[in-house]
Image 1 (tube, rainbow, N blue to C red):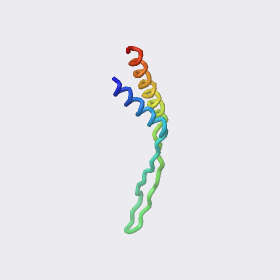
Image 2: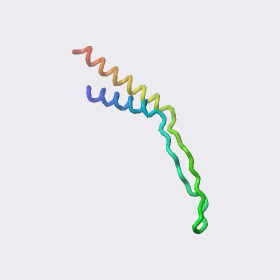
Image 3: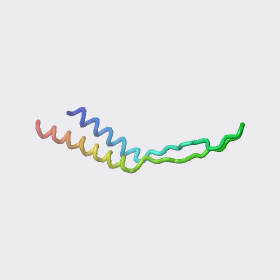
Image 4: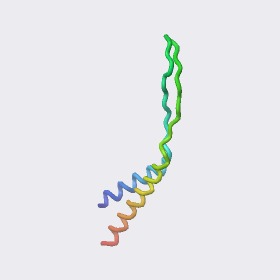
Length: 71
């Protein structure tokens, strides 16, 4: 149970620290011989990841707190 709590804490903190993850998507739209046109789009992971990180963090803390009360 302690390993699960620590994993949830680690995952929750990692998601909250990185927050929104963005990446760029490059696509070639037109290609004629040696010439080509590319489009670069920036994509973002939704902010729902922050909610998931918070839930994981709270779950990890709750598991650790519950474990300490039983002892």
